[in-house]
Length: 260
Image (cartoon, rainbow, N blue to C red; front, side, top):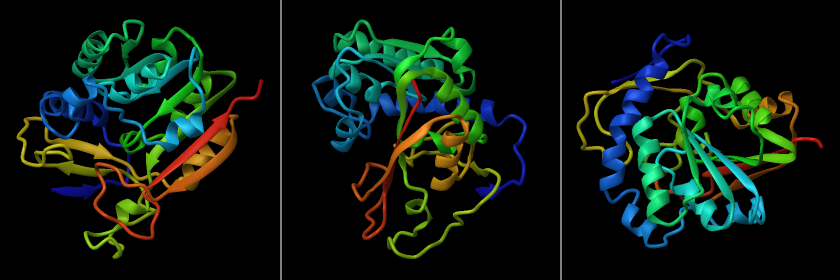
């Protein structure tokens, strides 16, 4: 069952955390994330991500909402000194285990809510703050997210966001019919088992809350947080979660720097 609510509901964070905690064993064991393939050397980043971020060798990189750490550790394999942060303790435990398994012993993983990241990381700052696919839809307050990310970037560093394009999520199965509302306010409340990695999986924590954030909202939030947007790129590259779409942007990337 899917409904919408006009306000930020009480308990949204706890519900989402419980839902993500239950996803961890499904994602670890199932074919969707292909964890054995990753351990064997598979890269999880799109080709345009390293091209847009640049050389990370010897640089510090913080991955907010890192889940089980596959993208985080893909940056580590490129030479970055990585820190991943996620509010799901089971996900962080898996990420730490994978770091040890692939020999990324200096990778650090921290359990904390993204809005509490500054305190959880002791006020440290990083060369790059990275946020990957499917992260922003779990957050109700985009301005607070941008302020948090900006506070975690050192002067001269930048925030890099690679996210699903909200327009693509509005399209139906035919890839052309608009079925959603780009300007939807308030959360979408979903109460049903399963998830994108395994729609048939069962779980006790079925309730979850998600929010739609337009590209303009994202850019405006980063600017309001004191960052300078260097580029906004739209990509038609597919991704594992998206059904086929033609002639529409599927992913967008933003790089926003912090003045020295």
